[in-house]
Length: 275
Image (tube, rainbow, N blue to C red; front, side):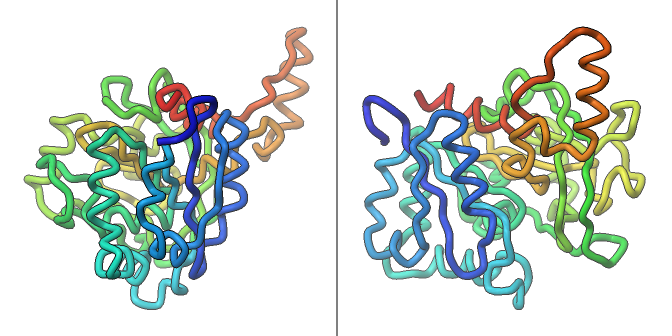
């Protein structure tokens, strides 16, 4: 998977995915060589999947969310003649990294690649339902990372500030049993939190009122990760809406602001693992 010199990342696109350029740029900024590949081209040569160390399913509105978020796209992956779903499972089992952002997270959940609490893939155990407030949410959120999680992508991170922009982001486990397994196995990697850094069910800090303040989950291996916030939209310091205020605060302390935003750390962790 990937060249000996530089790990490669595959960024899937097509059918309404519209964050592929930003996702590819985030991968490149972290050190990967990134290729944007249309789903149809991957289906025509599904074996190319194994050339890559990281596969990213970006955000967007695949198939216009007409049948529900991620439903049609996940069906195309699962039931296409190329058996792409089986190859994705094999890819992960052989050590590959799989990242789903927003619509990509919705697709991974529909496919049963997340949360996969029982250690096998294919059974849908949760859903991402319409936001409780009933409308599209576009805002920045604060996130608390579970330091005891085995997620490759969140290693060494304590908190994040990232944007969300979705209409169907309310994470709902299929049963109390699934929720207990998620909690016990530390698969809820990131949670929406309030100004004090405490996980919360309160809107607007928890913008969709997800169960257990869930903003993102990983599979038991830690190599499959999905989240509703957009790390690819927060890879530079100036991406944050308060960047000018923060720049003044750094200057007041005699410090230089960082070049990168919080989202960069997720892709940097993937690169460190992949290389």
